[in-house]
Image (tube, rainbow over all chains, first blue to last red; front, side):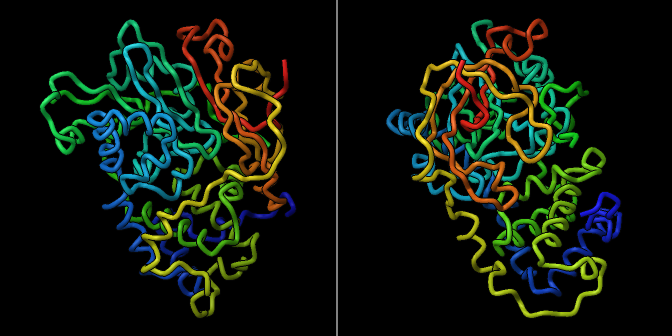
Length: 202
Length: 215
């Protein structure tokens, strides 16, 4: 393609909302997209596939040490035991927070994220600021998120540069001993499974 | 090529919307995502090609996230012959649904389908857990998943993952060329020198054998 050639997207309306609508109309007309499939996709990532899945994985690991061992040894099949698998979760790795280590996940090159357990990444995860800073100043980033590290904790940052997808297993909060897995899952925020938060106290 | 997408370590301001729980901030964001997912089901490209299409956008830094996704999609649709530029400009004639178009009923199965990137073939691993390696210099052009901030640096092999599809050639439809993939761990001091916040903090990346040299 010659250098002075306009990029294809410049043929679409410049306003992003109109652009999306025009692209949808063209693709539906051309038979490449079934409009009902678009609704099904949006509904799925709006309602079925989201951080509630990851929270179940974490809660299960907190109450079931054999599951936790499987999860840390080979996360993909362990997570699939709970029914969570698929696109952008083909090769899962779970990293555990301890009194010695706090883990933080980023994708500096794009926005790789473990969809089957966390859904669609939030705007901050996809922001230039997070992608730029998480690898160089993770401690400043964590402070900005309000995470207070223990003096004993070192940081491990995981930059998702291939098709491995990372999920952080947060530390179980104290005072949660009597809770069942469903109650425990409610203490696990999306950010806690990326590493920009800790699990909530009960 | 500027590698405008290669952001790790660049100076940047505050992180926006840290407590946000909205999944889509506007209906068109959802449409842009769903159009990409639906079109990728047709099978005319792969994940590396779609990343490369976004990275090549001349106006990458100016576009918002889902604008990049729409722009990359437009590039691929034209380059792969699914749409002409005239059609993209609005001159379409109605056509029947493409035989590979994603149907609504197939969405739950399609999105939960596992298509691994691990391959049974490829070269034997040159490196093993505990080996110290140096990453190659930063790429100047093309699609490469070695970020500039980790190029030419010394780290240690933490894990070997077997042979994974190599993005570099796959992004140009030149084959999968599976290669050993490793998790390489660097100290903050090795990457950032005096600027490291804490020298013993660690940063790990998943890097193909092509990106590594023995020490």
